[in-house]
Length: 161
Image (cartoon, rainbow, N blue to C red):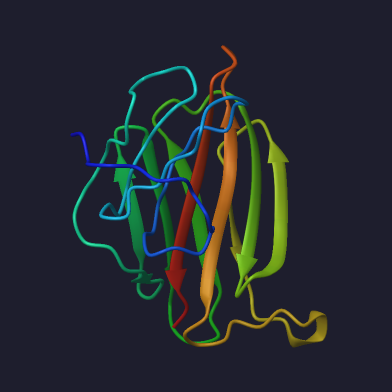
């Protein structure tokens, strides 16, 4: 499904939950503001934004949040305030190298570089100043580099309980 006009991606903290964008040099990233899920790949599986539609806004992490399109799914779930957030990235074509960064309220929480679909959890840890402030934003941002050289960027956010 083709979704309207795209504009340059200015900020990672935006009004949608999942965004897959091209990351190869010479390919401009795009953001479809009316979409909750959109996709563009650097090898040209489309010239505009495509994917799920409707709505905007950030889903609550509790009890669970997810976004999906033809390229896969990203999900997170939290049992309640100060409880861990379990998350995972589930691409339709999972083969490749992943670089993932996890943020909580604009603070770096974790990074992952691996050759399998990333998943994990974040926990409340006051000893290491890792807080899960109610109303805060949990954010996953990363890239998947496929063996053919195509790259997909992914982005997901939800509001902490």
